[in-house]
Image (cartoon, rainbow, N blue to C red; front, side, top):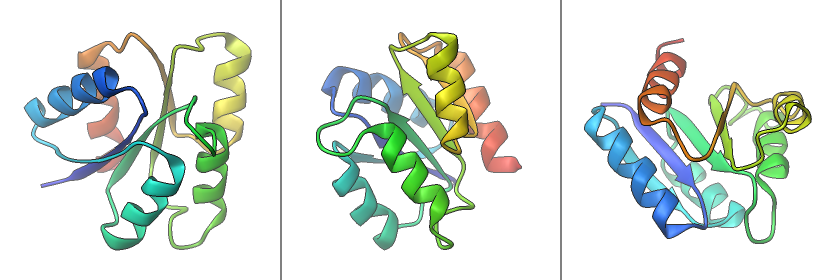
Length: 121
């Protein structure tokens, strides 16, 4: 079974995304900050990472850029997830190396479809 790491500091959003992915048959790991995410990625390499942009400490943009720059994590697909839905936000997110950019509130079917598509590729 595939595993997704959810990085979000909002408990509500994390519960929604976790539930949604679990119903889609995906194991879920959680982290509430970029630092916690990095520790989890080292110990349990996930198949895909879903990252909120606004996080305490390191932003989702920075975390994405750092993960894509490291050889050991550059191949993990990343979905950026944010309330920031402007074209510039999406452009900037993709420029950081994200494989997909979804806006909140999350369309649950689109999230599962996107995550499963990235796991297969």
